[in-house]
Length: 205
Image 1 (tube, rainbow, N blue to C red):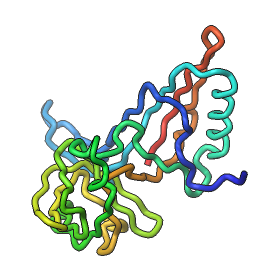
Image 2 (cartoon, rainbow, N blue to C red):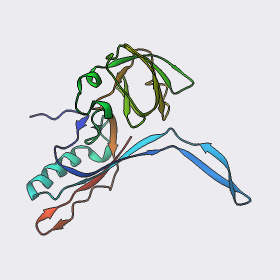
Image 3 (cartoon, one colour):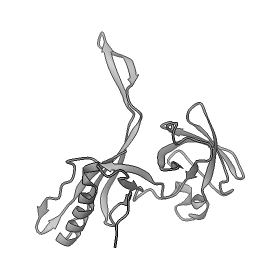
């Protein structure tokens, strides 16, 4: 069967799936104090994975998946969907309201999203993730604050979405949120212990 890109994550059990934000800010000191803070790059997510112990055949299959990414030179990379955080906290059992997509109507102050077309039953909190998708571009953020009722919500997020994806009409996702990422070269490891292999690797936005 032909593979397609971007590729989904391998279907294995991960004991670690950590998502970390690099805020792209540097700080310099004056007289021993941090005084100058500079945004040198757009905020970007990285993800670190560790699998449960795998049989050789399972390790080999995952390794083939990694090789297919060609060290990040494949244009479309990997679709990251957090394997442990699939739904908002309020919808871990009742998935339906979170599975309805919304549409981005506007953005104010860089990170306040006006969203329409959501399920009236959608409940979001500050532990939840939110995604934007516009054409081939994706964004993943954390909910900071939310208000609204019915089919509209005003959602403050961090980090602020970048301009190319924060466009009116962008799809707003609340469940199984996709983020296009690339493999971090040299991060794949698969040491063997007692006939089992614990595989680790990293992805970066």
